Image (cartoon, rainbow, N blue to C red; front, side, top):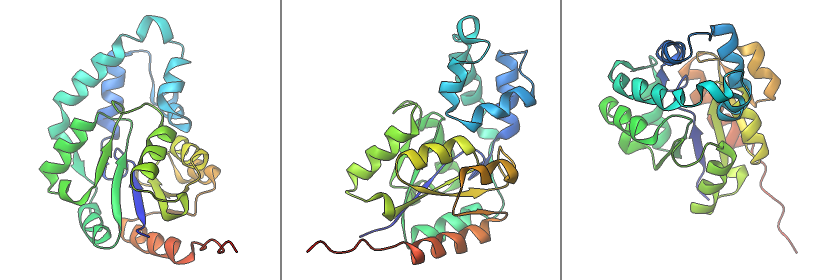
Amino acid sequence: MQKFVLFDFDGVIVDSLWLAFGTAQQVHPHFTLEKWLPMFEGNIYANYDHSECTDACKPAQEDYFSIFSSRIGEIVAFSGMPEVVRQLSAKYGLAIVSSSVSMDIVATLKRLGLDAHFADVLGKDVHTSKVEKINSLLSRYEARADDCVFVTDTLGDMLEAEEAGLDAIGVSWGFLPKEKLVQGNPFRVVDTPQELLAAIDEYFAHTKVPSSIS
C-alpha cells in the first residue's frame, strides 16, 4: 500500500505569514497578530465565524482572497523545502490540504517547479473542513489513515487530522510556535526541512501493520 504525505501549504512549504497577516489586517483593521494567530488553533473558518467581526466583516473574506491572490507572486518557498518535496515524492504520494484557494496554490507550485510532485491540491474551494478533505483523499486513493501523515504548522490542523484518524508532524518555522504545536500531540515537531525528511521516514517505519483477520 502506498504511503501518503499530506501537506499544509502556507507556513509549511511557503513563507506567507506576513503576507497573510498584512492582508487580513487590511480588510480587518482591528486585527492584531495577537488576535489573529490564535484563530489557527482551530479551524480558521470556524473561528472566523465566531470572531467578533462575524456579521459586519464577513463580506471582507472575499476581499481578503482577492487581495491575497493578486500578490501570490511575492510568496517564496522556505529554504530547503523544494528539495525536500522532490525527495519525498520519489518515495511517497504527496497532496496538499490547505485553507487557501486551490488555483493559487497550483499557480505557486508551478512557479516553484513543484506542481508535478503533488497528486492533489485541495483548498478552501473544495471544502472549508480539513477533516472532509482528508476523508476525501483517503476514499479517492483507497488509503487507510495509517498510510498517511499530515505535515502542518498549526494546532488546528493537528486537531482536524486527529479527527480524521491521522497523526501529524509539526514544523516550527510557520504560523504557530513549537510550544503551541506540542499541544496537538504530534509524532514530532521539527525545526528544519532536513529534519522533516527523517521524521517522515521514521514515522512510516514505525507505523503498525494491522493484524490479519482470521
